[in-house]
Length: 363
Picture 1 (cartoon, rainbow, N blue to C red):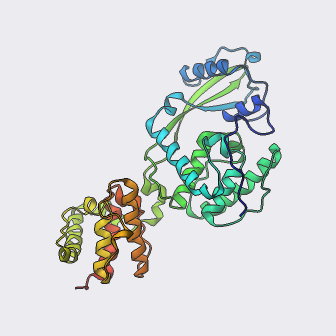
Picture 2 (spheres, one colour):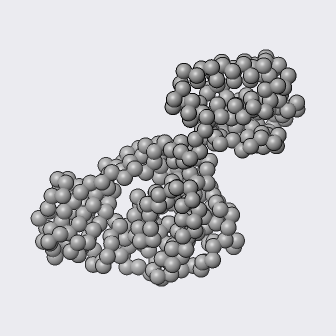
C-alpha cells in the first residue's frame, strides 16, 4: 500500500462552498441554501433545543435555510459536554491514529477528517488486511461519495453476518453527521476487537428540526452510542460463564474456589498465593508466571513488566501471557487484555478456566 501524504484536518470540505460544508456538518438533507452567519445559526439551534417537543417556532420561512419538509439534526450542546461522550471521541481518535501511524495520517476531528472516505478507506484496509479498488484521491463531491459508498459496502459485508445494525449511510457520513460516524467507528472497533476500552452506556440527545408549513418544529431523540462491552461484542458469543453469571450466581463461588485452588497449586512453587482472582491477575504478572510454571520454562524478565505501574504496561503483560497461551496450543482467549486489566471478573474466569481445562492434571 502506498503511503498517503500527511493529512491535516480541513477547515472545510474540499471542492465545496463554506455554506455547504457547514450545513453538511449539521446533517442537512436535501437541497442546501445559502447559510447565514454562524452566530445566527447557533442561536436558531439553541431556540430549537429549548422549545417544547414538536412545538412550532415562529420563524419566517425566508429567515431560515430549510426547505419545506427539510430536516436538520444536531447534537444537543449539553450532550457534547458529557465527559463520557468526550472520552468516547478521544478513545476512538487515539485508536484510529494508532492504526494509521504507518500511513502518516493524523486525524484530529472525526467529522472533518472522515467524511470523504479517504481515511476510512485506509483504516478498513489496515484493519481487514485488504486492498479496496478505489481512487486514491477524489476532489469532487461525486467522487468522494463513490469512494465512500465502496468503503461502506465493504464494511457492510464484514458486519452484516454478525448481526450489526448499520446506523449510517453514505449521505450521513458525507454530511459529517457525527452520530452516524460514531456508530460506524464503534462497530468497527468492536468487530476487530480493538485494543481499547470504550466507555459504556454513552448516549446523546439529538435535536431534530423540520420545517412544516413554513414553521420550524423540533423534537429530541436519544441516540445510544455504546451499551456494555459484552453486548457490543455480540450476545451470540454467550458461553457457560454467561449462563453462570445470569442464572446460577450461587455456583459462582464454587467455580472461583476451584480455580483459586488450581492456580495456587502452581504459584505456591514461587511462594505466591492468590485470594482474589479479578484483582491479582489484573496486572498480568501472575498470568505470565503461571504460564511458565505450567509449561515448565523460565520467562525472561525483560519480556514483561514485573512491577507494572501503568495501564499500558499491564495490558502488555496480559497480552504477552495470551501469546504464551497461543504458543502452548490454547485457543485465542475470548477476553481482551484490556478487560482483564479493567477487573472484569468474567473475562478473567474465562482465561483461567481455559488453563484449568488443559493443565488440571499437571503437577
